[in-house]
Length: 63
Image (cartoon, rainbow, N blue to C red; front, side, top):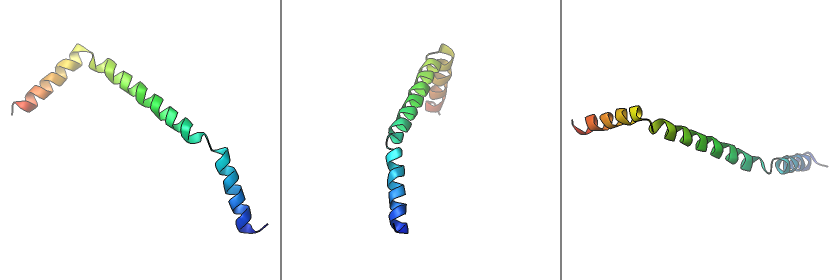
């Protein structure tokens, strides 16, 4: 078997072994994004944070 043919065969075998890895990586990234969004919702529901953000926007609009 030629060197090029062996190389192509080994690359094809490696790609077949990693077939589902992209889907798993997307699932992990999606779960991390959902967790982060949930954390932001919990933080932004607090009255103190809401007051800080309201004051910040009010100050920015009253220049």
